[in-house]
Length: 148
Image 1 (tube, rainbow, N blue to C red):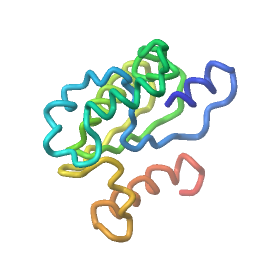
Image 2: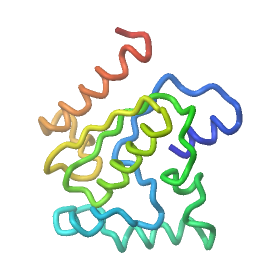
Image 3: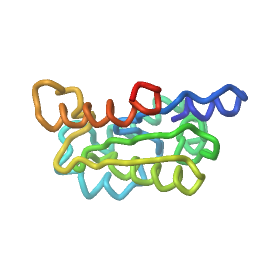
């Protein structure tokens, strides 16, 4: 998402579309799902996210839009299709990103996959839910890439 914001800010053309999968867009880990999904998420813990944010930011502003696109002006970005697992601590990063993108006029779609973990799509070919998710990405991208 930060790349899309940077491209827009530089006056460059946006890509045809983007598919953020389980995006991390809040360096402060303020989403309620950091707590509500803490016991279900086996991959990403709130404290881990805070430590990673601290290492990444190196004392810089946690609300800088290029570090935390949740705080960016999203107007003018290309269409996005967000996929996220319902059991992720990062679930609220995705839902809030979708809300902000839609409010900014972005053609934004989100799909929450119940009981799925962070980037579950990696199991494509080995887990039906992952295979279904990747097929949905392909179906969404085809017309945007002129392949329909």
